[in-house]
Amino acid sequence: MFTVKRLLTVVLLTISMVGIALAGQKRPNSLNVTATAYNSVSKQTDSTPDIAAWGDRLIPGMKAIAISRDLLKKHGLSYGDKVKIKSPDGEYLDGEYVVMDKMHSRWRKKIDIYMGRDVHKAKRWGRRTVSIHW
Image: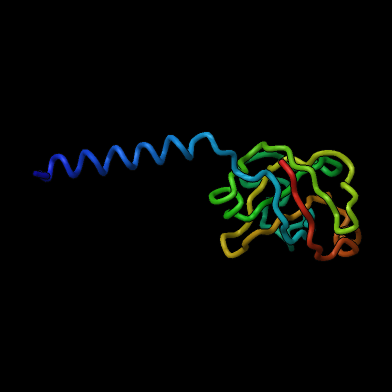
């Protein structure tokens, strides 16, 4: 006869077995996202446009990106991760970009590529769908 204690033991064992089975699985390390660009200017950020969300100083020329918070929570990216960005034509952008900033919580599946103070370059980039790989 099943008692509450036995039932709870069976449930806990089942949950732990599922957890062990899932622990060995890798999360996908690529994703299609919307990519825009941003600059170190107060009109686009705040009163400290050279300081990223985790306190890093952004310097023009560095390869940095800001990511939407769902990429942190749901997709496993984290501060300092190196990301390759593949454009729609199948070519990778030059080099690896480092996750150094995070975006407002309203954005989903989105990255912002840091382009220093070159606002015209950021506008030329516009909005594109890209594939990121980490």
